[in-house]
Image 1 (cartoon, rainbow, N blue to C red):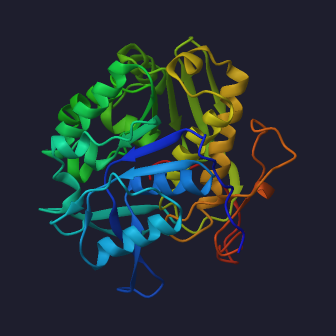
Image 2: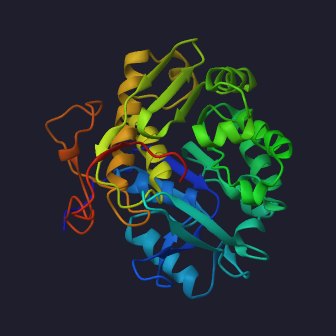
Length: 357
């Protein structure tokens, strides 16, 4: 087994706050499922840790069998769980179904579960050395906990010392009304520096509106960098300096898309940090070439995740003879089981970059 790149004690801490749940992933035989750790924020934390970053998770982990699965998976990936409350409520479940192209859909079982019961005292526990805070997905717009998460993020944004990243990870079946969802999402965009969303997300939120107008609106609300993933077309980025660009997808043999959007987020945040973009000021001043290579890194990390069953992002290999900001290549990444692909042999490669997590 290849070990991940080791972060040093001098590296910045990336903190992720939000849900940690169990994905019941559909297998080949109808009615057969496999329980796998999941939840968009949890997946982002795993992705960051595997890319060699010092990562802390803030998730309400239940004291039950599923909660123990989540804790074990996180700690085995080197994630710091010091700021994770022990929740009395049960673990949230998401039943994952796949279509013929490996695209995932989700049915959630979340009434009275742990992920939405945050208190102000719990969200006040953001590690003091946090350089980047990522939040989003269901926990960012599900009351009562979402109000406490928003308050904590708002306070950190006001301090001006950390980069704040947000992914709305829209689930229409849970949100119901797009007008209400827009209000919640725009409130989170307004306290964030980096916003990643999928075309599917933004077209549901703003029907009939082009992504350029949506991104410009989000920049006006306070974002410095907006990245919209676009399936096989790649990803589109919009920067506060007025620049925009698109990057292509990569051809891979898709097994499923579970967690691929979260892998994109981890790849993007890791790429920005490796290029020294660790503060709002440096991100605002970044040039288009540097941002484009960061998005390329994210596309690669996401694409490789699509070749695996479930949320299973790649691990970074040591690159002692490469500068930190060198673009990632497929040869720089592996998987914890030492393989590079578990795709089905009868599925031809196709262009892909993840949309939803």
